[in-house]
Length: 334
Figure 1 (cartoon, rainbow, N blue to C red):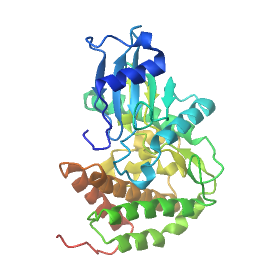
Figure 2: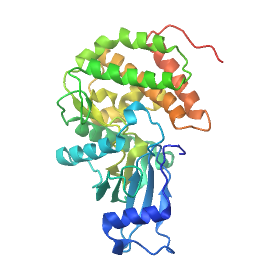
Figure 3: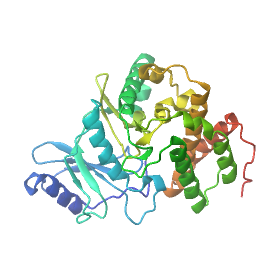
Figure 4: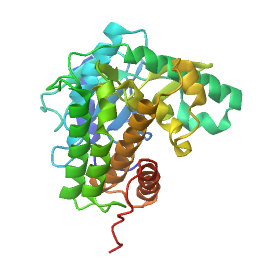
């Protein structure tokens, strides 16, 4: 996926970064095929690097400092490093070990870190080749994995490193407001007026008060961030959007209120969630609204060259506003 947030680096800079992480003696000769860009990411750029020892590693680089990112994406790499420590210390969920992290900006104009390369398949890439039974088995495993992650408790709602909120209502409403402010600042066209969306969210905000304990939420744990081999999940990737909040905000639950996000039945079975209450269904609809706003507004920040994601996400926003009882205040086309 192409995005202006991908901070590509020249070969000599990558060589210097690898030498700092693993020692100059581990850097292959310049005439060898030792580096290639990994293309599955949507936000950060990542390179696969072969060391002189034969080991393969990945370097992940944060966006350039002169590229504006969405408010919730600021400092995302630091969030990911925090999330990885929490997951390794508190769960048995398979995540990669950080070999080396550099936030000095001496060699590169942004944060970066190295980790081992995972020789496995991306679940989203191979999904269409799998049988229904295989897909269900992976989705069940993803549900169980997500539940284990949600077992991590936080001291407050919101960012992993703070500042936090004492209530989930305050934290979620701040998340929505930051998204809408990002969209307004960039004049992103939405299918509904910005104030209409604020009014609909406020009308259902009481349901958020049912959430009283901050839990670790991975949020971006979808098949594209899941590496599998021989029927097992061997690693989950991309933890930079994690926060403390309501576990129902996890992506795996999105399909419960919108079939456009896929069938969530196997995920929910693996998670072990009981039938949804009225309040839980309302919250999940609010979370789908939040997700569709992210998907719409980020197309502007990432300078997408086609409207496929924008159009799809606008339809999801219309769908969610309809089930939340929102008025039909569509903005006329320009």
